[in-house]
Image 1: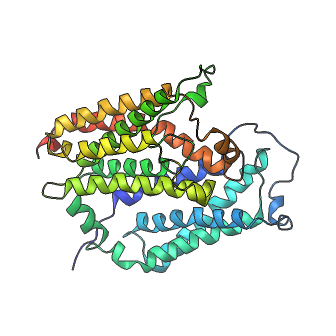
Image 2: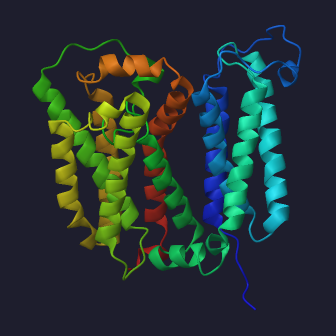
Length: 356
C-alpha cells in the first residue's frame, strides 16, 4: 500500500493566493471609517443595480484557484467529499468576512451577489480539484515535481516565487518583466523629458536583466539530468504569453502585442541568447549572476522614464473596473525582486544543494 505525502508546494501556493485574495478584496486599504451602514445589511439587500456581468464573473473566477489550491493543500489529510465540504465552508466564510470588512471602506461596496459568486467559485475549484484525482495521486503531481526539480521545501518556495513572477506579468502598466518599481509608493518629483532612444535602451535593459535573473533562478531549482535550457526558455515564453494576455484582456484585444516595442524585443532576444549558455555555468555562478541582474533590473526600472507609448491608454485602465486587480498585481510586482534577492542569498548560503 503506497503512502501519499502532503505537498508543501500546494500549501505554499494556497497561502500565497489566499493573501492575494485578501489584498484584492480590501485594496486600497485606506479611508477606513464607519459609514453608518448596519452590519451585514448587504446579506438581505436587493441585488445591486445596474448589474455588471464582468464583476460577477471576476468574483467567480477569482475564487476558483482558491478552492482548487485549498483541496490540494488539505490532501491527504482530507480528501473527497470531506475536503470539498470544508473548502466550500471556508470559501463562504472568507468571502463573508471580506465583504463585511468592505462596509468600512468607502472605495468598496459590499454585495450579496459578490458573496454568492465568490462562494460558487470556491466550490467549483474544490470540485475540480477533487475530480482531478491524478493530480492528487502520488504518481501525478508529486512525481512530476520530484522528477523535474530538486527536493526540499526551499525549492518549493522558489517555485512559488516563479509563479508570482508570472502573476506580475498580468499588469500591463509595467515595462516588460519590469518588477520592483517603487516610484508610485514614494511619489518622487516628476523627472525631465528623455529622448526616445534612451527609453528604448532602458526598456531593453529591464527586459533582458529580469528575464536573465528569473531564468538563472529557475535553472538552479531544476534537477540534474533534466532539460534545463528547455524549461528556462519555456518559463520566459510563458511570461511573454501572460503579458500578452494581460494586454488583450485588460486593455483591448487590439493591444495584445502593444508591449512588443523595439526595446522589449531586443531585451528578450538578448536574454534568450544568454540563457542558452548560462545554465551550463556552475550553480554558484548562476546564483551570483541572478542576484546581480536582479539588482541591476530593479535599479533600471526605478530610473526609467515614463513609457511614451502606454501612458494615455493605461491611465484609463488603472481607474476603471480593473482598479483593484491592478493594485494587487502592482504590489506583488513591487515586492517580488526583493523577495527573490533574499531567496537567492538563501540558496547560495545552503551548502548541501550546491553540488550538481
